[in-house]
Length: 153
Image 1 (cartoon, rainbow, N blue to C red):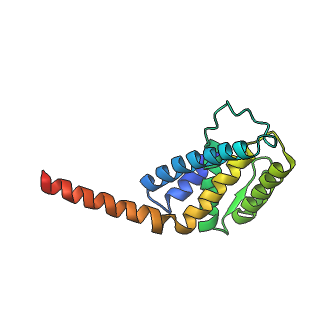
Image 2 (cartoon, rainbow, N blue to C red; image 1 turned 180 degrees about the horizontal axis):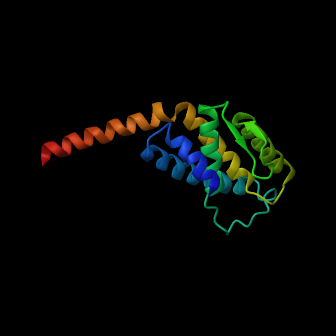
Image 3 (cartoon, one colour; image 1 turned 90 degrees about the vertical axis):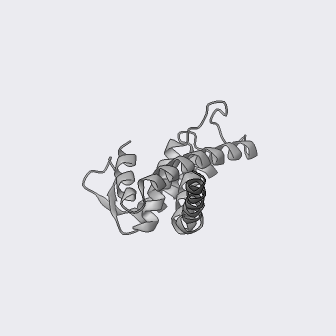
């Protein structure tokens, strides 16, 4: 929750509140989907119980962090277990993505590494292409619908 408050507030300064909520929820759903697809493809490599639903919250946080890291790569952030030590956000993201990738390859069972990587990749993709190819067309379509409805009423 601390990460959501910190990065959500910072990302809220870059995009609208509606866009942020839509991004966060979509990233959570897509990171859960990545986990589910990975389990279907590699059931012997994932020891997480497939019957326990993955809500995607940690994947959505990773997506939020990767979005902000792409937009503001030289921002400083710290790790709660290393008080007073600051790192560039892009370096932290690369470190945690590498750690999750190693977790996937080695079959570590503590965290949902597939969901984390999926969320981070969705965040990076959205940061690069999302506003131009997703958010702006949706806003234009909604505006056209509103104009048509206002003419009908």
